[in-house]
Image 1 (cartoon, rainbow, N blue to C red):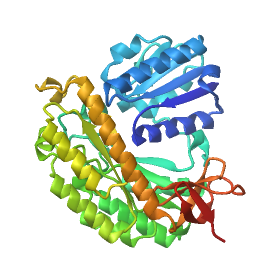
Image 2 (image 1 turned 90 degrees about the vertical axis):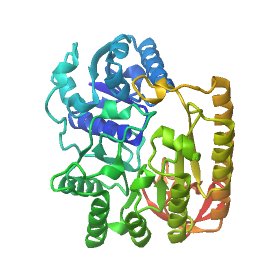
Image 3 (image 1 turned 180 degrees about the vertical axis):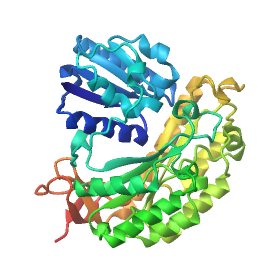
Image 4 (image 1 turned 135 degrees about the vertical axis):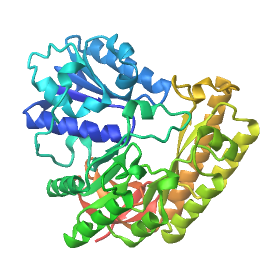
Amino acid sequence: MKYSVITFGCRVNQADSLGFEESFRAMGDVAVEPEHADLVVVNSCSVTGSADQAVRQTVRRVVRQNPSVKVVVTGCYATRRPDEVGGLPNVIAIVPNERKDSLVRGVRLQPDLHLTTAERFAGGDGSCGAAIEPGMAGRTAYTLRVQTGCTERCSYCIIPSTRGTPRSVPLAEVLRQVARVCDAGFREIVLTGVHLGSYGRDRSPAESLTGLLRALNSVAEARALAERVRFRISSLEPMDCTEAIVDLVAASGAFAPHFHLPLQHASDRVLAAMRRPYTRADYARLVDRILDRMPGAAIGTDIIVGFPGETDDDFRMLAEYLESSRLSHVHVFPYSDRPGTEAAVMQSKVAPPVVRERGRVIREIGARLQMRFRAAAVGTEHRALTLEDGSLVVTGNYLKARIPPGHARNEWVRVRLTSEGEALVLT
Protein backbone atom coordinates (compact mmCIF):
# COMPACT_ATOMS: atom_id res chain seq x y z
CA MET A 1 0.00 0.00 0.00
CA LYS A 2 1.14 3.53 -0.74
CA TYR A 3 0.51 5.93 2.12
CA SER A 4 1.11 9.50 3.18
CA VAL A 5 0.94 11.13 6.62
CA ILE A 6 0.15 14.85 6.95
CA THR A 7 0.76 16.39 10.35
CA PHE A 8 -0.57 19.59 11.88
CA GLY A 9 0.24 21.20 15.21
CA CYS A 10 2.42 20.34 18.14
CA ARG A 11 5.41 18.11 18.72
CA VAL A 12 3.13 15.52 20.32
CA ASN A 13 1.38 15.14 16.97
CA GLN A 14 4.78 14.95 15.29
CA ALA A 15 5.74 12.13 17.64
CA ASP A 16 2.48 10.29 16.98
CA SER A 17 2.96 10.64 13.22
CA LEU A 18 6.46 9.19 13.45
CA GLY A 19 4.85 6.18 15.09
CA PHE A 20 2.42 5.85 12.18
CA GLU A 21 5.30 6.07 9.70
CA GLU A 22 7.27 3.43 11.53
CA SER A 23 4.38 0.98 11.68
CA PHE A 24 3.36 1.45 8.05
CA ARG A 25 6.93 0.86 6.89
CA ALA A 26 7.26 -2.23 9.08
CA MET A 27 4.31 -3.71 7.21
CA GLY A 28 5.95 -3.09 3.85
CA ASP A 29 3.96 0.01 2.95
CA VAL A 30 5.60 2.73 0.90
CA ALA A 31 5.61 6.45 1.74
CA VAL A 32 4.66 8.67 -1.20
CA GLU A 33 3.33 12.18 -1.77
CA PRO A 34 -0.40 12.57 -1.01
CA GLU A 35 -1.36 12.88 -4.68
CA HIS A 36 -0.01 9.36 -5.30
CA ALA A 37 -1.22 7.65 -2.10
CA ASP A 38 -3.85 4.95 -1.63
CA LEU A 39 -4.33 6.19 1.92
CA VAL A 40 -3.67 9.58 3.53
CA VAL A 41 -3.63 9.96 7.31
CA VAL A 42 -4.26 13.52 8.48
CA ASN A 43 -3.12 14.11 12.05
CA SER A 44 -5.10 17.23 12.93
CA CYS A 45 -4.72 20.16 15.31
CA SER A 46 -7.54 22.21 16.85
CA VAL A 47 -5.74 24.78 18.95
CA THR A 48 -7.29 27.65 16.91
CA GLY A 49 -10.03 28.13 14.36
CA SER A 50 -7.42 28.59 11.66
CA ALA A 51 -5.99 25.16 12.55
CA ASP A 52 -9.39 23.57 11.94
CA GLN A 53 -9.70 25.43 8.65
CA ALA A 54 -6.25 24.31 7.53
CA VAL A 55 -7.22 20.67 8.04
CA ARG A 56 -10.41 21.07 6.01
CA GLN A 57 -8.58 22.85 3.20
CA THR A 58 -5.87 20.20 3.12
CA VAL A 59 -8.28 17.27 2.90
CA ARG A 60 -10.20 18.95 0.07
CA ARG A 61 -6.99 19.77 -1.80
CA VAL A 62 -5.67 16.21 -1.46
CA VAL A 63 -8.93 14.77 -2.79
CA ARG A 64 -8.95 17.19 -5.73
CA GLN A 65 -5.46 16.03 -6.65
CA ASN A 66 -6.16 12.36 -5.91
CA PRO A 67 -9.90 11.62 -6.29
CA SER A 68 -9.64 7.92 -5.39
CA VAL A 69 -7.63 8.39 -2.20
CA LYS A 70 -8.94 7.13 1.16
CA VAL A 71 -8.55 9.59 4.03
CA VAL A 72 -8.29 8.82 7.74
CA VAL A 73 -8.39 11.81 10.09
CA THR A 74 -7.12 11.68 13.66
CA GLY A 75 -5.87 14.21 16.21
CA CYS A 76 -7.55 17.00 18.14
CA TYR A 77 -9.89 18.33 15.45
CA ALA A 78 -11.10 14.81 14.71
CA THR A 79 -11.67 14.28 18.43
CA ARG A 80 -13.39 17.62 19.03
CA ARG A 81 -15.60 17.83 15.94
CA PRO A 82 -16.02 14.40 14.34
CA ASP A 83 -19.25 15.62 12.71
CA GLU A 84 -17.42 18.29 10.73
CA VAL A 85 -14.58 15.93 9.83
CA GLY A 86 -16.99 13.23 8.73
CA GLY A 87 -18.48 15.62 6.19
CA LEU A 88 -15.19 16.05 4.36
CA PRO A 89 -14.73 14.17 1.06
CA ASN A 90 -13.26 10.65 1.00
CA VAL A 91 -12.98 10.38 4.80
CA ILE A 92 -13.38 6.69 5.58
CA ALA A 93 -12.61 6.83 9.30
CA ILE A 94 -12.28 9.29 12.18
CA VAL A 95 -9.88 8.14 14.89
CA PRO A 96 -10.02 10.04 18.19
CA ASN A 97 -6.84 10.69 20.12
CA GLU A 98 -7.45 7.88 22.61
CA ARG A 99 -7.38 5.36 19.74
CA LYS A 100 -4.40 6.71 17.85
CA ASP A 101 -2.18 3.84 18.91
CA SER A 102 -4.40 1.38 17.03
CA LEU A 103 -4.81 3.44 13.86
CA VAL A 104 -2.29 1.61 11.67
CA ARG A 105 -3.44 -1.78 12.87
CA GLY A 106 -7.03 -0.81 12.06
CA VAL A 107 -6.11 0.20 8.53
CA ARG A 108 -4.04 -2.89 7.84
CA LEU A 109 -6.79 -5.24 9.09
CA GLN A 110 -8.93 -3.88 6.25
CA PRO A 111 -6.83 -4.40 3.11
CA ASP A 112 -9.61 -3.15 0.84
CA LEU A 113 -9.73 0.06 2.91
CA HIS A 114 -13.56 0.00 2.90
CA LEU A 115 -13.76 1.40 6.42
CA THR A 116 -16.80 3.26 7.62
CA THR A 117 -16.42 3.72 11.36
CA ALA A 118 -13.78 4.47 13.94
CA GLU A 119 -15.07 1.48 15.94
CA ARG A 120 -12.84 -0.75 13.82
CA PHE A 121 -9.87 1.01 15.38
CA ALA A 122 -10.54 -0.16 18.94
CA GLY A 123 -7.84 -2.20 20.66
CA GLY A 124 -4.28 -3.05 19.78
CA ASP A 125 -1.27 -0.82 19.84
CA GLY A 126 -0.24 -0.64 16.19
CA SER A 127 3.36 -1.26 17.15
CA CYS A 128 5.37 -3.63 15.03
CA GLY A 129 8.87 -3.15 16.36
CA ALA A 130 9.73 -1.47 13.11
CA ALA A 131 13.24 -0.57 12.08
CA ILE A 132 13.71 3.17 11.98
CA GLU A 133 16.46 5.40 10.76
CA PRO A 134 17.38 9.09 10.75
CA GLY A 135 15.71 10.88 7.88
CA MET A 136 12.48 8.90 8.17
CA ALA A 137 9.64 11.27 7.22
CA GLY A 138 12.28 13.94 6.73
CA ARG A 139 13.15 14.00 10.43
CA THR A 140 16.75 13.96 11.67
CA ALA A 141 15.82 14.25 15.34
CA TYR A 142 13.46 11.69 16.87
CA THR A 143 10.46 13.14 18.72
CA LEU A 144 9.60 10.85 21.64
CA ARG A 145 6.25 11.30 23.35
CA VAL A 146 6.54 10.41 27.04
CA GLN A 147 3.20 11.82 28.19
CA THR A 148 -0.20 12.91 26.92
CA GLY A 149 -3.28 14.56 28.40
CA CYS A 150 -3.76 17.64 30.56
CA THR A 151 -6.00 18.84 33.39
CA GLU A 152 -4.69 22.39 33.80
CA ARG A 153 -7.82 23.98 32.26
CA CYS A 154 -6.39 27.25 31.02
CA SER A 155 -9.46 29.34 30.18
CA TYR A 156 -8.67 29.56 26.43
CA CYS A 157 -7.59 25.98 25.78
CA ILE A 158 -9.66 23.11 24.39
CA ILE A 159 -6.86 20.53 24.61
CA PRO A 160 -7.87 18.96 27.97
CA SER A 161 -11.13 17.86 26.35
CA THR A 162 -9.43 16.52 23.20
CA ARG A 163 -6.42 14.84 24.84
CA GLY A 164 -8.04 13.59 28.04
CA THR A 165 -6.49 13.15 31.46
CA PRO A 166 -2.71 12.87 31.86
CA ARG A 167 -1.18 9.49 31.00
CA SER A 168 2.55 8.94 31.30
CA VAL A 169 4.67 6.31 29.59
CA PRO A 170 6.31 4.19 32.32
CA LEU A 171 9.92 5.14 32.97
CA ALA A 172 11.21 1.69 32.03
CA GLU A 173 9.43 1.92 28.67
CA VAL A 174 10.82 5.40 28.02
CA LEU A 175 14.33 4.08 28.65
CA ARG A 176 13.67 1.10 26.36
CA GLN A 177 12.51 3.43 23.59
CA VAL A 178 15.54 5.68 24.08
CA ALA A 179 17.86 2.70 23.73
CA ARG A 180 16.04 1.55 20.59
CA VAL A 181 16.19 5.01 19.00
CA CYS A 182 19.87 5.43 19.87
CA ASP A 183 20.69 2.03 18.44
CA ALA A 184 18.90 3.03 15.23
CA GLY A 185 21.41 5.86 14.83
CA PHE A 186 19.49 8.94 15.95
CA ARG A 187 21.69 11.57 17.57
CA GLU A 188 19.01 13.87 18.94
CA ILE A 189 15.88 12.91 20.86
CA VAL A 190 13.20 15.49 21.62
CA LEU A 191 11.18 14.68 24.74
CA THR A 192 7.60 15.85 24.39
CA GLY A 193 4.17 15.67 25.99
CA VAL A 194 0.89 17.57 26.07
CA HIS A 195 1.72 18.64 29.63
CA LEU A 196 5.29 17.44 29.86
CA GLY A 197 5.84 18.85 33.33
CA SER A 198 3.15 16.58 34.75
CA TYR A 199 5.09 13.49 33.67
CA GLY A 200 4.72 10.66 36.17
CA ARG A 201 2.15 12.24 38.48
CA ASP A 202 -0.47 9.76 37.27
CA ARG A 203 1.78 6.76 37.94
CA SER A 204 1.63 4.63 41.08
CA PRO A 205 3.99 5.07 42.77
CA ALA A 206 4.28 8.59 41.43
CA GLU A 207 7.18 9.52 39.18
CA SER A 208 8.31 12.96 37.98
CA LEU A 209 9.85 14.74 35.05
CA THR A 210 12.91 15.48 37.18
CA GLY A 211 13.25 11.77 37.90
CA LEU A 212 12.94 10.95 34.20
CA LEU A 213 15.61 13.49 33.24
CA ARG A 214 17.93 12.18 35.96
CA ALA A 215 17.42 8.63 34.71
CA LEU A 216 18.24 9.71 31.16
CA ASN A 217 21.32 11.50 32.40
CA SER A 218 22.45 8.38 34.28
CA VAL A 219 21.93 6.22 31.21
CA ALA A 220 23.83 8.72 29.09
CA GLU A 221 26.77 8.64 31.51
CA ALA A 222 26.74 4.86 31.88
CA ARG A 223 26.60 4.16 28.14
CA ALA A 224 28.64 7.20 27.12
CA LEU A 225 25.55 8.35 25.27
CA ALA A 226 26.28 12.01 25.86
CA GLU A 227 28.94 11.75 23.16
CA ARG A 228 26.45 10.16 20.74
CA VAL A 229 23.05 11.62 21.50
CA ARG A 230 21.59 14.88 22.72
CA PHE A 231 18.27 15.19 24.53
CA ARG A 232 16.15 18.28 23.91
CA ILE A 233 13.27 19.16 26.22
CA SER A 234 10.15 20.26 24.41
CA SER A 235 7.63 22.85 25.63
CA LEU A 236 7.58 23.07 29.42
CA GLU A 237 5.14 25.14 31.46
CA PRO A 238 6.93 27.81 33.53
CA MET A 239 5.60 26.47 36.84
CA ASP A 240 7.02 23.04 35.99
CA CYS A 241 10.53 24.24 35.12
CA THR A 242 11.96 23.75 38.57
CA GLU A 243 15.33 24.78 39.90
CA ALA A 244 16.29 21.10 39.98
CA ILE A 245 15.58 20.77 36.24
CA VAL A 246 17.54 23.93 35.42
CA ASP A 247 20.49 22.72 37.50
CA LEU A 248 20.44 19.28 35.89
CA VAL A 249 20.40 20.64 32.33
CA ALA A 250 23.17 23.10 33.19
CA ALA A 251 25.40 20.41 34.73
CA SER A 252 24.81 17.62 32.20
CA GLY A 253 26.33 17.29 28.77
CA ALA A 254 23.39 15.19 27.66
CA PHE A 255 20.79 17.96 27.40
CA ALA A 256 20.53 20.83 24.95
CA PRO A 257 20.65 24.30 26.57
CA HIS A 258 17.26 25.11 25.12
CA PHE A 259 13.94 25.73 26.86
CA HIS A 260 10.52 26.56 25.46
CA LEU A 261 8.50 28.22 28.22
CA PRO A 262 5.04 29.47 27.17
CA LEU A 263 4.47 32.88 28.78
CA GLN A 264 1.17 33.62 26.95
CA HIS A 265 1.02 37.18 28.31
CA ALA A 266 2.94 39.70 30.42
CA SER A 267 -0.03 41.40 32.09
CA ASP A 268 -0.77 39.78 35.44
CA ARG A 269 -4.44 40.68 35.02
CA VAL A 270 -4.62 38.82 31.71
CA LEU A 271 -2.61 35.90 33.07
CA ALA A 272 -5.13 35.54 35.88
CA ALA A 273 -8.02 35.61 33.40
CA MET A 274 -6.21 32.95 31.38
CA ARG A 275 -5.86 30.87 34.58
CA ARG A 276 -2.09 30.76 34.25
CA PRO A 277 -0.59 30.05 37.70
CA TYR A 278 2.33 32.50 37.68
CA THR A 279 3.04 36.19 37.31
CA ARG A 280 5.23 38.13 34.92
CA ALA A 281 7.78 38.54 37.74
CA ASP A 282 7.81 34.76 38.33
CA TYR A 283 8.50 34.19 34.65
CA ALA A 284 11.24 36.84 34.47
CA ARG A 285 12.99 35.28 37.48
CA LEU A 286 12.92 31.87 35.78
CA VAL A 287 14.44 33.28 32.60
CA ASP A 288 17.18 34.98 34.62
CA ARG A 289 17.88 31.78 36.57
CA ILE A 290 18.34 29.79 33.37
CA LEU A 291 20.60 32.34 31.70
CA ASP A 292 22.64 32.89 34.85
CA ARG A 293 23.39 29.15 34.85
CA MET A 294 23.63 28.76 31.07
CA PRO A 295 24.69 31.96 29.29
CA GLY A 296 23.78 31.63 25.65
CA ALA A 297 20.92 29.21 26.24
CA ALA A 298 17.91 29.57 23.97
CA ILE A 299 14.57 30.36 25.60
CA GLY A 300 11.52 30.45 23.38
CA THR A 301 7.96 31.31 24.31
CA ASP A 302 4.35 31.37 23.13
CA ILE A 303 2.26 34.54 23.23
CA ILE A 304 -1.49 35.02 22.78
CA VAL A 305 -2.59 38.45 21.56
CA GLY A 306 -6.14 39.74 21.68
CA PHE A 307 -7.36 37.68 24.63
CA PRO A 308 -10.86 38.83 25.70
CA GLY A 309 -10.58 41.99 27.76
CA GLU A 310 -6.99 42.73 26.73
CA THR A 311 -6.70 46.51 27.01
CA ASP A 312 -4.23 48.87 25.42
CA ASP A 313 -2.38 48.97 28.77
CA ASP A 314 -2.27 45.16 28.93
CA PHE A 315 -0.83 45.02 25.44
CA ARG A 316 1.69 47.74 26.23
CA MET A 317 2.92 45.71 29.22
CA LEU A 318 3.28 42.66 26.99
CA ALA A 319 5.18 44.53 24.29
CA GLU A 320 7.45 46.32 26.77
CA TYR A 321 8.31 43.12 28.62
CA LEU A 322 9.15 41.20 25.46
CA GLU A 323 11.22 44.06 24.03
CA SER A 324 13.35 44.17 27.18
CA SER A 325 13.45 40.42 27.78
CA ARG A 326 16.28 37.94 27.27
CA LEU A 327 14.12 35.58 25.19
CA SER A 328 15.34 34.23 21.87
CA HIS A 329 12.21 33.01 20.06
CA VAL A 330 8.56 34.10 20.12
CA HIS A 331 5.60 32.23 18.63
CA VAL A 332 2.55 34.47 18.28
CA PHE A 333 -1.04 33.19 18.37
CA PRO A 334 -3.93 35.56 17.66
CA TYR A 335 -6.73 34.66 20.06
CA SER A 336 -9.76 32.88 18.62
CA ASP A 337 -12.75 31.43 20.48
CA ARG A 338 -12.82 27.70 21.11
CA PRO A 339 -16.40 26.58 21.89
CA GLY A 340 -16.47 24.82 25.22
CA THR A 341 -13.80 26.96 26.86
CA GLU A 342 -14.33 29.58 29.55
CA ALA A 343 -12.80 32.31 27.39
CA ALA A 344 -15.27 31.71 24.57
CA VAL A 345 -18.10 33.18 26.66
CA MET A 346 -16.11 36.07 28.11
CA GLN A 347 -17.21 39.59 27.28
CA SER A 348 -15.12 42.47 25.90
CA LYS A 349 -13.81 40.63 22.86
CA VAL A 350 -11.01 42.44 21.06
CA ALA A 351 -11.89 43.54 17.52
CA PRO A 352 -10.27 41.34 14.83
CA PRO A 353 -8.35 44.23 13.17
CA VAL A 354 -6.87 45.12 16.57
CA VAL A 355 -5.90 41.49 17.17
CA ARG A 356 -4.16 41.34 13.80
CA GLU A 357 -2.28 44.59 14.43
CA ARG A 358 -1.16 43.47 17.87
CA GLY A 359 0.01 40.19 16.39
CA ARG A 360 2.06 42.08 13.82
CA VAL A 361 3.72 44.19 16.52
CA ILE A 362 4.67 41.16 18.63
CA ARG A 363 6.00 39.27 15.61
CA GLU A 364 8.25 42.24 14.84
CA ILE A 365 9.51 42.24 18.43
CA GLY A 366 10.13 38.50 18.15
CA ALA A 367 12.14 39.04 14.97
CA ARG A 368 14.31 41.61 16.75
CA LEU A 369 14.87 39.24 19.69
CA GLN A 370 15.91 36.48 17.29
CA MET A 371 18.29 38.80 15.43
CA ARG A 372 19.84 39.94 18.73
CA PHE A 373 20.26 36.34 19.88
CA ARG A 374 21.91 35.31 16.61
CA ALA A 375 24.19 38.35 16.57
CA ALA A 376 25.37 37.65 20.12
CA ALA A 377 26.28 34.10 19.08
CA VAL A 378 28.65 35.10 16.27
CA GLY A 379 32.12 33.81 17.08
CA THR A 380 30.92 31.14 19.52
CA GLU A 381 31.75 27.45 19.03
CA HIS A 382 29.27 24.60 19.26
CA ARG A 383 28.78 20.91 18.70
CA ALA A 384 26.10 20.84 16.03
CA LEU A 385 24.06 18.21 14.22
CA THR A 386 23.79 18.20 10.44
CA LEU A 387 20.30 18.31 8.94
CA GLU A 388 18.70 17.92 5.51
CA ASP A 389 21.48 17.28 2.94
CA GLY A 390 24.26 17.92 5.46
CA SER A 391 24.74 21.59 4.64
CA LEU A 392 22.55 22.82 7.50
CA VAL A 393 23.35 22.37 11.19
CA VAL A 394 21.49 22.95 14.45
CA THR A 395 23.28 23.76 17.69
CA GLY A 396 22.23 22.81 21.18
CA ASN A 397 20.88 26.31 21.71
CA TYR A 398 18.74 25.94 18.61
CA LEU A 399 20.65 28.09 16.18
CA LYS A 400 20.61 26.89 12.59
CA ALA A 401 23.44 27.75 10.22
CA ARG A 402 24.68 26.80 6.76
CA ILE A 403 28.05 25.09 6.41
CA PRO A 404 30.07 24.20 3.29
CA PRO A 405 29.12 20.93 1.55
CA GLY A 406 30.90 17.70 2.36
CA HIS A 407 28.91 16.24 5.23
CA ALA A 408 25.98 13.85 5.33
CA ARG A 409 22.79 14.25 7.32
CA ASN A 410 22.96 13.26 11.03
CA GLU A 411 26.65 13.91 11.71
CA TRP A 412 28.13 15.68 14.71
CA VAL A 413 30.39 18.54 13.69
CA ARG A 414 32.19 21.25 15.61
CA VAL A 415 31.37 24.69 14.25
CA ARG A 416 32.14 28.33 14.81
CA LEU A 417 29.31 30.70 13.96
CA THR A 418 30.86 33.22 11.57
CA SER A 419 27.81 35.32 10.69
CA GLU A 420 24.09 35.26 11.15
CA GLY A 421 23.09 32.07 9.38
CA GLU A 422 26.54 30.71 8.47
CA ALA A 423 29.18 28.66 10.26
CA LEU A 424 32.71 27.33 9.75
CA VAL A 425 33.38 23.65 10.41
CA LEU A 426 36.36 23.18 12.74
CA THR A 427 38.80 20.32 12.35
